[in-house]
Image 1 (cartoon, helix red, strand yellow):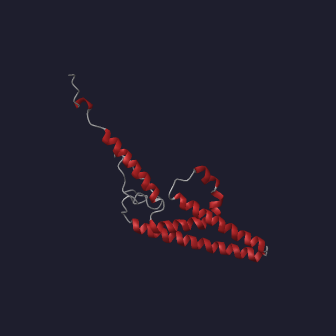
Image 2 (cartoon, rainbow, N blue to C red):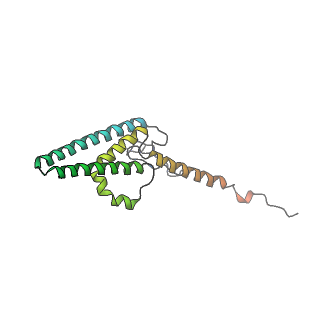
Image 3 (tube, helix red, strand yellow):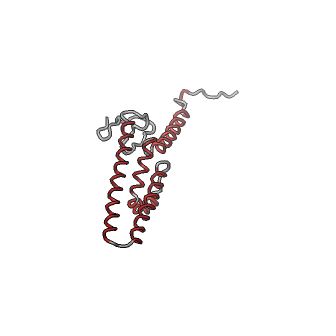
Length: 169
């Protein structure tokens, strides 16, 4: 057993592709074993609780702006900024569960995703209701790698010295 995430340790001498571990799930997503369902429930509850706590913090920030008396324009601007950034972060995070994100684009959107962290938490929550976040993408990649590995190993016909040679007639 691996000490870090409770998944079985994979022997180093096995041939073939190995599944990529997911955050909070390790490799339990492959067979849906070792508490996979409990982990999904935990991730869903945790991400929803974190989103609720984040909304509470944003409410305090809103109240601070209201107390400061900056005016309705600034208040509306801040609320719209957080709403738009959260919507964009939700969409970006949701898309990241089905296809690999572009690292350059990810780096350029880092600030926007930080401001819209509530959207990312909600995307994590909703995805964990159906599967481990990112499981679909990782499963597709793993199945493709397994098929490729099987096709490579079936092409091998055995010991070439034991093959029958064609006789000239």
